[in-house]
Length: 304
Image 1 (cartoon, rainbow, N blue to C red):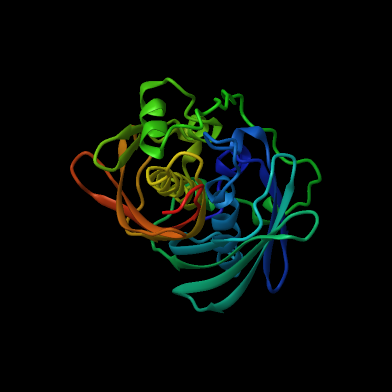
Image 2: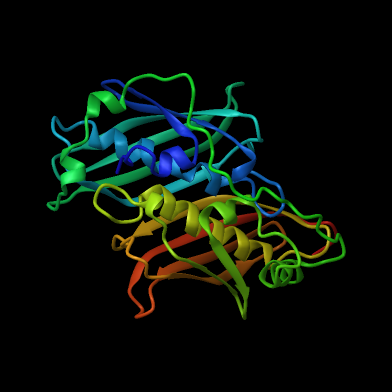
């Protein structure tokens, strides 16, 4: 669902909503706050925009501000953006009815390089809130040139020892020997390395949508970053990796009520060029809110 003012879109410097008969568009300014522990901008950095523009395309097809939530989001990465880029996302409805809508998304840089392609499904739900009913759709779609400034977070990116493998890197993040990276700071995500990497997060107020749950794009950013860190676990010294594909399945809406959430990862396959990992988001009593499957592309420094 479209996020409230000063919520996820503001924190991720997303704005300038454009609405047409075909769908909607959004822009995002890429700041240093969005890089990971390697200093790299990947899919979790622009997941809020990708989810917002696809769910928003369906939301804007209704005359009144009805409640819609994302049920599935699939993204494939193209060119890697860099700090300083202004990204542009365009979403078009592929199908809609009163129960659900499917939309495509393409994200490009100012040079028209395709950063990401994707497809998503949103569904209409019966519940509502005063915050939702109070939304002014025309005001949200007012064009703006200046995008929201990022919040003040620690943007330290540590130098990583080139002789470390992925598990050693994750152990150093967990112990605080190296920085967890600006994006993890922004999401307040902690990292532990067990048999597989496990992340924890306590949802913050800014993450909420008008229904009081974590906004779908923030969920995609959280679980996408968990998958990325799971991919890091399978690197040898000198290897590089990219979060190539991400498919997010939304089971339930995780509430923003102070309860911590766990993002546990599993490895399904690792090869020389590609690996597949999965992650689930659960609470302390085991309620499953989200599952994601991701493909990791590797550039190996030596023969595998």
